[in-house]
Length: 114
Ligand SMILES: [Zn+2]
Image (cartoon, rainbow, N blue to C red; front, top):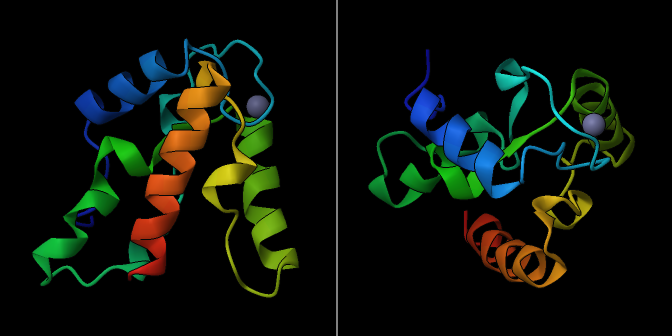
């Protein structure tokens, strides 16, 4: 258990934000709540610092199909230990590219400030 584990409410909100599409490949999700992915990894935060609480909230949550969840983590390893950045998930807001770009910029700013 981590302070940053997503609640069911967070996962549902992220899934609806994505129009129930996988945030990576844009295909329809079935029942993939278990593949709620932390864009900034849980271990990147200091649980004692309330400025990091966003790590467990919707802004840091993308819902992926099982296959894409594996791909996201493997790509992270390929990039010398870094993780896939927000821009890696083009369907973070379903088909809304403008909202995706706004979200990616805001989240990347938070990640850079960790
Ligand atoms: Zn997918």
